[in-house]
Image 1 (tube, rainbow, N blue to C red):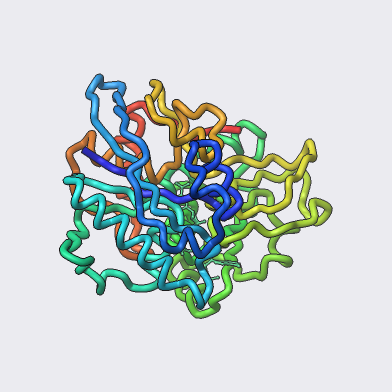
Image 2 (spheres, rainbow, N blue to C red; image 1 turned 120 degrees about the vertical axis):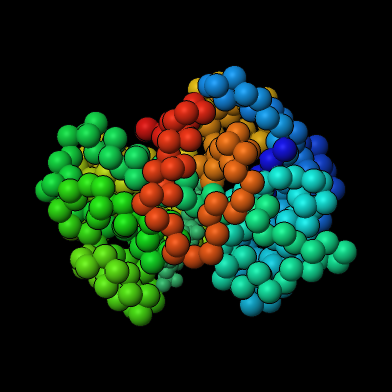
Amino acid sequence: MFALIGHLTSLKHAQAVAHALGYSEYANQSLDFWCSAPPQIVDNFHVTSLTRQTIEGKYIESCFLPEMLTNRRIKAAIRKILNAMALAQKSDINITALGGFSSIVFEEFNLKNNKQVRNVELEFKRFTTGNTHTAYIVCRQLEQASAQLGIDLSRATVAVCGATGDIGSAVCRWLDRKTNVAELLLIARNQKRLQTLREELGRGRILGLEEALPQADIIVWVASMPKGVEIDPEILKKPVLVIDGGYPKNLGTKIKHPDIHIFKGGIVEHSLDINWKIMEIVNMDIPSRQMFACFAEGILLEFEGWHTNFSWGRNQITVSKMEQIGQASIKHGFRPLLG
Ligand code: NDP
């Protein structure tokens, strides 16, 4: 059995979902209430592969919200993630994917030093961040969408916002080694980490967001922003391909322009329906088939019997591991979402 640990994108989203699901006691509550709410298993379902193998899964809502990422509430955020992991382990799950901010909080606050959660000693090999599959899917979306739009990668400048992150650095490695992309623009705040990445890649220009965006033919957003940024569409090149892989979405602006092509990054579509309710709640267009690529990694590890933390730690994702999970992804019937 596998599990997915997820969370909603904001307090407003959480209140609306609680209302829709009939949890009236949660629907009008403030952030303080959500800080004390325990994790819950809210969905049980089956997934069938193209190979006809069927596996069983559970969805664990951690009750974490991005608004908890403040000094005052960070302890609550940490508790949410550890409690959800302990619940997965107590429920005898073989492999659990840490969705969205779960793995970011885990890494940022070094939670590997917090193995003991009450009477549960966490076994980290039962968890994966899902970031290898996410990075692979973002790269395949970039390759396939640019071909669709007639953008020639050998002449294209690609800006990666969140380049030094776990997913961003993997995307840069893939673009450098597997494509003939003309130029890479590396965007993040910490200059030291940017320099280290540039040295590893042996290429890439380090630029601020405002300087980079007008130069880019393709923009990949994989920054850990608790709220999306508003950008002025006027400053962007036309045409431009934007792959927004953030959860919550990195792009706050709802841009409607015929030459600005925005794709939902890090999302996969499965070939067969899945009997879960959870993807409706996170507003997937086809909830029975579409999901976050990190969740799909948990599913793939269960299908393949790779009960190990396939994606773990920061900035250790190799191109060969992306290829390995990519092959499993195709074999079991997933494809990158285009559009
Ligand atoms: P990391 O924490 O490893 O990396 C985040 C990156 O964003 C770093 O480079 C960080 O650098 C940069 N960053 C953060 N804030 C800003 C900012 N204001 N401006 C510019 N850069 C910024 O995160 P992950 O790689 O694990 O995840 C990245 C995103 O992908 C998140 O939004 C996450 O929720 C989403 N995600 C999506 C998945 C899916 O299945 N679709 C799966 C997993 C994650 P610095 O701090 O130096 O600025």
